[in-house]
Amino acid sequence: MKTEYDLIVVGSGAAGLSCAITAKKRGLDVVVLEKEPVFGGTTALSGGVLWIPLSHHGRKQNPDDSTEAVRTFMQAETGRFYDEEAVQCFIDNGPRMVDFFERETEMQFLPTLYPDYHPTAPGGADIGRSILAAPFDIRGLGKHMARLKPPLKTITFIGMMFNSSNADLKHFFRATKSLTSFVYVAKRLASHLKDLALYQRAVQVTSGNALAARLAKSALDLGIPILTDTPVKQVLMEAERVVGVLAAGPGGDQRITARHSVVLATGGFPHDVKRIAKAYPHVKRGHEHLSPTPTSNTGDGLNMAEAAGGVVDIRFPEPAAWMPVTRVEFGNGEIGVFPHLLDRYKPGMIGVLANGRRFTNESNSYHDVGAAMVKACAGMKETAMWLVCDKVALSKYGLGYVKPAPIPIGGFVRNGYLLEGSTLAKLAVCAGIDAVGLEQTVREYNQDAVHGEDPAFGRGSTSFNRYLADPEHKPNPCVAPVKQGPFYAIKVVMGDLGTFDGITTSVVGEVLCRDGTPIKGLYAVGNDRASIMGGNYPGAGITHGPNMTFGYVTANHIADVAAGQVEAAQRATQERLAA
Image: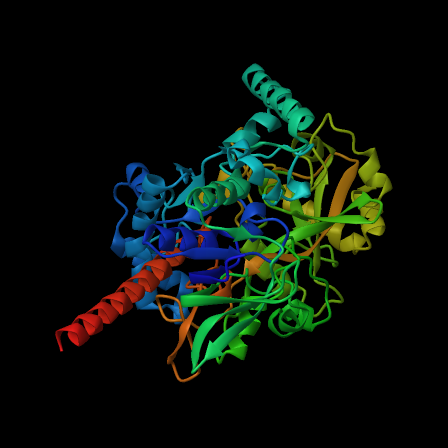
């Protein structure tokens, strides 16, 4: 096994692979080391969306968008954590990164119809800033197909993936009402069942699985080794410079050296029990937290950076991208985590606390609902809400992991995932929430909901609220009364999509000491690096967009430094010969 490279990248998610590919294209000898037996990291489980303002895709949709508008939006969204230099670097290089990957690699993107999550904020946009990884046939990975991390089991249907653009899902919701949608769904199911018979997994992948697959295919085609089952234990230093890593492998620990740099891209710290106990407000209170991110994301990169002299501070009020989730029992001890990406936006769904009262606009983004939930439950015995609906809404939209009609619901009622009551009072008793509070909440909500209004929290008031709702429901796609029993609920707790706090770096990704000086040869990208979003979540793809952009920026910086070192060595040699 080769043990010396120009660049070592630790982690195989979008940030790490973007950095590796860019560096390889710039002429560096690169290796990617991955802790898990599969590659793709959190990326493979994600929606595969990137927030990249002013890309060529976005300019076609929103030609009036501008650098000034994006900068204004970022200032409004990040507040006191606004970093002008980093934001400008992102604005300048995001579109370049998209052009580079589409021109030079297997990576292809599609435009989406996503509005910014806060489109009414200064500089916000209703369209044109979020792009999506194009679907991919993973048979293109050849012998490496089995090494691609599969998607979350909870967000597939018999293993079939849905596209994050939302257009795909609309056909499945309308399959019993529209011949066009029925034919579309029938074809998708037939093709998927054939793939399962032949390959034992879905081969037509979408969303984050497509993003991870396309990047991995690009890396492998360039001859970049992706060494799985190779956890990195330590960065190695000599004379105050990082010179490589100590990695574990089948043959024991091995020293792998880097002529130029090591890049940390290990996915942040969502499963670092000690760190989240200090960082997450609800965990500090002793409340439950369930993260659907890979359990291997235990903060390895942050720990190694600190050991080398780097800084990891918990600075953001919201240290992670919150995601309301439910625990799913698959049987035989297998547990899944279901992220609530769609149901909350639908008409006829409300979220209540243990006191039976609503506390926020359920059609806001997952992060905003999560932040509101953490705050609202500060004085309660648990951080939890219950999503409540009636028979009509359940049949039409499903609820959490429960699929819409005609899929049976009996199994979910029996195993306790779906709570049922013939009346709201009986549902409240079943759920363990305040019956009087729930009845009063529904009564007050219904008075305005019958007219499509929600004066309490303003559901449906923004383009983003409406985007994931039901456009066929009038007059407000987000609002309908909860009135026809039996009634249903599921218990939702707090999870995350990844961490925002991380290693302190320069704009180009150099890991910095407390005094601001860089640690020579050590860089961080992705969720290992502190987010430029300042703990906020202003639009779809604000993780992947900056992560791939700064992976690209960091790789180019490393390549520039390496080229300068080579040129300096060549000059020194020429000077010696001349002497």
